[in-house]
Amino acid sequence: MTKPNLQVALDNNTLESALADVKAVGDIVDIVEAGTILILQEGTKAVSSLRALYPEKTIIADTKCADAGGTVAKNMADAGADWMTCICAATIPTMKAANEKIDEIQVELYGNWTKEDAQGWLDAGITQAIYHQSRDALLSGVSWGEKDLNKVKMLVDMGFRVSVTGGLSVDKLALFEGVNVYTFIAGRAITQADDPAKAAQAFQDELHRLWGE
Ligand code: 5RP
Figure 1 (tube, protein in one colour):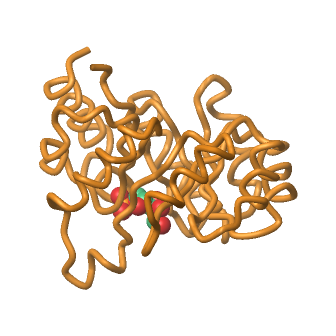
Figure 2 (cartoon, rainbow, N blue to C red; figure 1 turned 90 degrees about the vertical axis):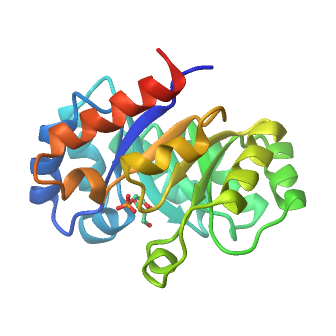
């Protein structure tokens, strides 16, 4: 089984603080994400600045796009993003339009969606999904558990490359041992740690321990 990627999510309010955070961990993580909060605050400048810093890394624009997929995707691709996210409530035409203008889109899963919806995304040529526990759900007391594991397994079995995110910490990774997760996305557990580089390395060490090289 391949070791999952580690993605850092930069959900900063300013580009200045996002760049300070990413410089501490960019060489440790596999993928860099311009988070939704950062993009809402700073726009495509956030993506182009990350691309300038890391010409070789996969850069994701977490737009959670709901409409005007082609326009948003073109803007993100022009700024240097490899991939961007569309919210699962977006229509298939929105997702397809986005997919034509950027290397890949990822369907970001929140709330209610069905296996039939997921098959529709696959049929539309979309092969990445992000299984997400929203930070607001986590704040209201929801936590990671068997129900999440089962949904992630279902998506993997259907043929998706699945990213997992939402309030993750190193100790939560073991829940997914033996599952072919593509990427784990961590934000605050890395960027708000006392030593972000040490925190990012701890995620990588645990991924190696659980999934091998
Ligand atoms: C919020 C997001 C976050 O980027 C993602 O959940 C990672 O952040 P954290 O680890 O801090 O929860 O997509 O909408």
